[in-house]
Length: 137
Image 1: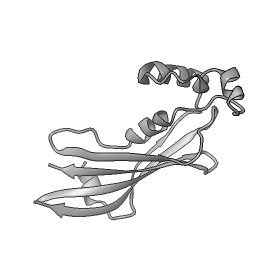
Image 2: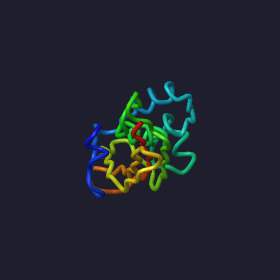
Image 3: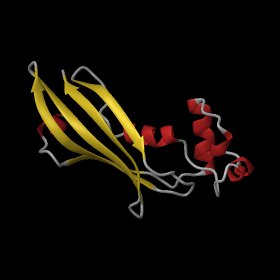
Image 4: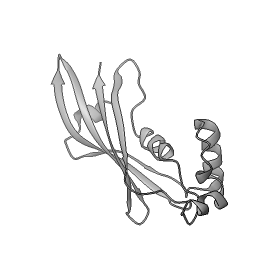
């Protein structure tokens, strides 16, 4: 984890490429998250709501971004994590998630870094952005 705290601003510190979003993934996430909105798993319901197909839960995309963050342990703590959803993530989208070091500061003898997060489709369409603040203990 020291590389995160030693990296220069602008450096990509974590990346994640995911397989295409499947209907099965959406159904599993419904059960795991408790988000049983039928627009994510019922094609007829999604079409009646004006969508061409079911689509990913926003929190699934945020969960993928969360996988870029260091796991809290005795040396690091995630202070905050936010996400902004920009466009709908469709069934079949393959997401590429990235964390870039946006800034670093020292507060009370501890290093604090800000990470800029983003999720894009394989063809570059930005689906979500986020920010996380991580503190070295």
